[in-house]
Length: 129
Image 1 (cartoon, one colour):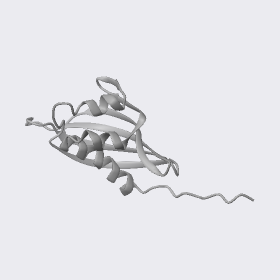
Image 2 (tube, helix red, strand yellow):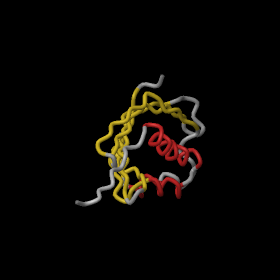
Image 3 (cartoon, helix red, strand yellow):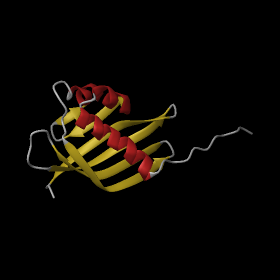
Image 4 (cartoon, helix red, strand yellow):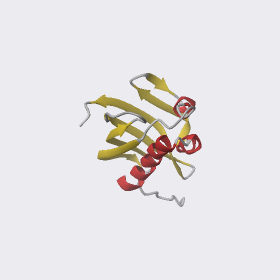
């Protein structure tokens, strides 16, 4: 009989902590941290169209893209111990903007070689609160 290692699925807090690191990279303008959190085959589905990892990281070319953010209404769907879907509401403020914007976001996180990385994200604009 084979000895099969059973992995446990992550908690909502564990994945939310990783997602917040992506947002922190946007606030800090830290392209290196952003790249490290995204898979090489990352796919973003945004109101502006499709984006790959280089597109996502490329938004830091000039400066940070976010000033502040709040994540709420978090939900975690465990698809397998190594694949989870995090969905939530993001309220955020861009640098030099007075208004807050809001999006509903779903992020697919995968454990690859024992490291959690974001492989897919879809952003849907909504009314600001």
